[in-house]
Image (cartoon, rainbow, N blue to C red; front, side, top):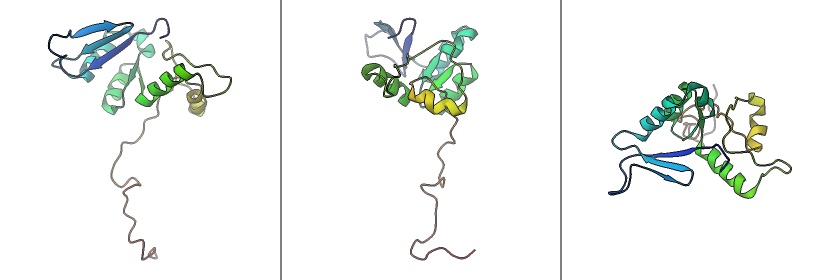
Amino acid sequence: MPVGVRVSIVLDGMPDPGAPLHERIGSVDISHAGRRSADDAIVEAVERRIYDERPGTIVVTDDRGLADRIKRLGALHRRIDWLQDALDLSRRGSRVAGVPPAPIGRAGIRLPPSSATASARAEGAPVDEPDRAPWSPGRGATKKRGNPRRGRSPR
């Protein structure tokens, strides 16, 4: 783990009977949200941070609602596949020849221009994911196209 990087894992619900609500294992803090949702606990943790430190705070989740909430607070959002790639790179080294693995978290991360997104991702640097349209029926995979045996009707 890079020096100065703090990792906090927030889990929904209560811990097992007799287990503590908060515990530290190495450099990782693990806490249970208790009676509130883990999303609310994560948002509260971001809110407690000094505003100038929030751009160096990365929340890893695939929950779009939570991502929107923490972005409004000034923190960064990464998808779970970003974390998996970062951990994979730190274990095996960079996939790109000659490029050293990037640290998992860095303070003061700035949004790269969209043209640099692919190269930054290849280098393992954190990149804000562009907002994607949520799945909806008829967006391509399930869109009705008529009877394939009849062919296209003239329009």
